[in-house]
Structures are given as structure tokens and as C-alpha cells.
Length: 241
Length: 70
Image (cartoon, rainbow over all chains, first blue to last red; front, side, top):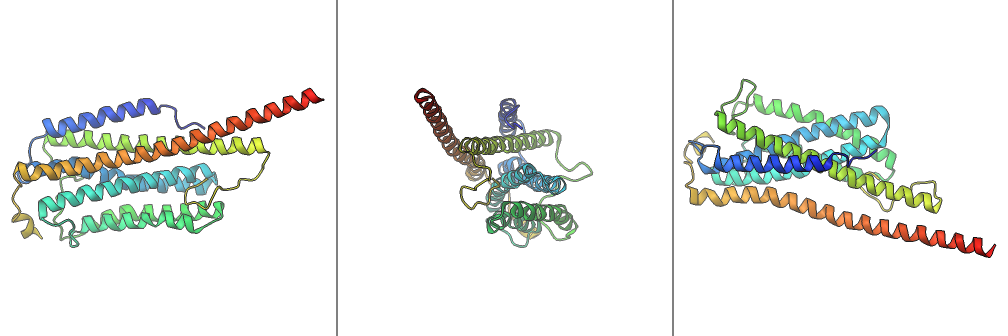
């Protein structure tokens, strides 16, 4: 199994899409009538949050595949998906805080359901790595981590629905099932930004999977050379080995 | 909270600019830090490949030496 196939094309597509998205953000998308220039943060903050949440669900789906097949490769894929989503989630949280400070005058607003629910999801998945680290046996670690990933991933849409049902909120609702309130140029810019961030997620996921696979192949080669049959972990680790 | 939002007018460009720049810099910085971490790991993998190659060569030389003695 090789993960590096198509990585160069994917990387180039990611760079091209993100460059186009940034160009559209600053030279094409009109200024928001209400928020002005500060609304430009929307094009990086919202895609980061959406991709992060989708990545958590993706990690859960991969974990289901692991429990169904018992193949450890699915566990590694799930681990990397959640790991990447955490990075994207933290980036989304920081950019959101900057936007909140500029718009509301506060870095954080505890009475805002969208912010708090996103933080809860992020903190939930932040416990994924310590959970893995707490279990030494690799088989049990993979199994428990998959169960956790599935449960936590199921929590993501539930959390989203709960927030949507909440009555008191101030977070702008520009994306709805009915088409949303974004004007054409803003919508196009947003969709390209979303595509760019999603491509970045897939590229980095593949990149990390390639690196992990290379290290595992290397260890297998070393074992074959030394004539060892058993897999001896280098050290206790949260990462699958 | 709606009163807070209603009372918060759009920031002028000279005030909004640093915030927007900060948000985009955070995004780029996180990607760059990630790439840097991956680069460190790649260096470690490269070092291990080199060590493995030396081990293979040493083993081959030892086998050749044994064959010569035999």
C-alpha cells in the first residue's frame, strides 16, 4: 500500500486553489456592508471549522472500518484524520477568537452556543491522544481508540443540530440548507476557500500517512534484517505503530 | 448579546487590517509549523534509512568474508 501516489498533483492543486481563494478574498469579494474588512476572516475561519468537524466524522468512519475489518491500517488512517482535524480545529478556534475580538471586543464569548459547542467538540477529541497513550497494548489501544472515535464522531452532528435548534444566538447564520444569505461573489469566494482548505486537509492527511507508512516499512525492513518476528515498539506512544 | 453586536459598528480599515492579517498569518504559521515538524521526522527517517543501508552493507561484507574463508 502506497499513500504517496498522486501526492504531487494533489499538492499542486491545493496550492493553486488556496492561492486563488486568497486572491478572490482580497481582490474580488466585496466588503461586507455590516462588518466591513474584518469579515475577510470568515473565508479562512469558517472553512477551517467545517473541514475540522468533517474530519472528525471522517475519523469516526475510518474507525468503523477498523472495527469491522480488524485491519490496523484503518486505525492509523483514523488516527491521522483526527490528528489533522485537531490541528485544523485549533486554527479555526484561534482565527475565530481574533474575529470575535475585532467584532465583539472579546476574545471569547461564553454565551455564544456555536463557539462553546465547537470548543466542547475540540476538547472531546483532544482526549483521544491521552486515551491512546494510557493503553500500552497496541491491539487494545487501537480498539478502544476506534470505539472512542466513533462515539465522539456521532456527537459532532448531534452537537451541530443542538446548536442550530438553540434560540438565543448571535453567531451570523449565512450558511443554511435553503441556500444561505451570501451574495454571489462572496459565495463563490467562500466555496473556493472551502475547497482549498478541504484539499489542504486531504493533502496533509496523505502526506502524514505516507510518512507513517515509510517509517513502518522501514521498521519492517529492520526487523527482517535482524530476523525478529515480533513487533517491538520503540517506546510507549499514542501514535499507532 | 444582540445588543452588543448591534452596538459594534464595522471597524475602519486601519483597525480591521491587523486583525485580518493576524488571522491569515495564524493559518499560514500553523501550516508552516506542521511542515517543519514533518521535515524533522523526514530527516529522522532518512537517518534510519542510511543506518539500515550501512547494516545491510556490513552484513553483506561479513557474508562475503565468511565465503572467502570457507
